[in-house]
Length: 333
Image (tube, rainbow, N blue to C red; front, side):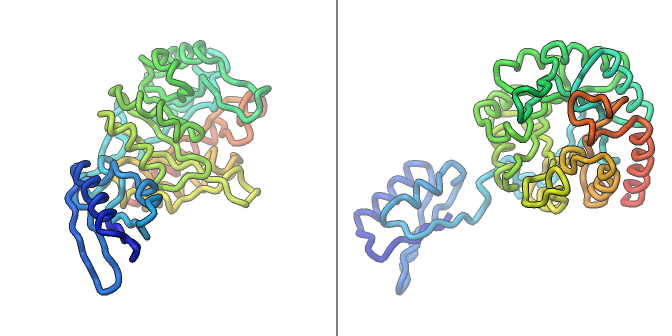
């Protein structure tokens, strides 16, 4: 980290800053030029707040040389992280496919979909028990009963399950869930992320609606700094001015994230596009761009779905898409 001091900085102010940095375990190198004075902070500066430095009256500018995230950083972990869940290897090859309904609605519905996506080749079953909705009047999920039904579907199909957590108070309900999902709205719920860092279970972390990739990686860092390094990054579209799709799917996020981090990256084309007919082309594009997997919404009767039916594939459409996914993945090997 490099700190540029203002020309009006007094020797006392400069020494005060140096002493403060050294107290944090950072070595300081001073460079005095013809015009500017620079301080180089050497060591682990991830815990130093740039905004705190910039607020000092005598500091002109602050620049990081390395990213503030360490555990998620590929520079510190060159090899790809592969997370094993059941028989699936997320981060390896071939790409993993997670499929299931947006919301768990009934035992019949979730078990029927589970068997259908398993037959089509899905590796993991998804289903929402707790549903964050924009409207307080919309279906909010079956909550605890939804998790029980997911576990029944797991027994019936043999597929591991992933579902979204909304609050720290719900954590005990997720003891038998294979992957805990953190949704876009909770990506920066730092207290929740800290608690998830204390457990030893894979966390599927979705990018926020208007968050940068560095912010996503910093959220992953919250989990990893607590000791849980099983984090799966998920690009699910960001909010832009474009209204023809629900969100704008940022496919460039895949190669960027994989260059910056060793963590596996999957894509959610269902929430990104909001339209079922756009899910197949975006799924194939994501695999071609290097995604480690997909999470796709599948419903046995999309027209009567209680949540997001317009973006859900039928089991037949999913089976056809899975065959195309396998062909694209094979072509990349």
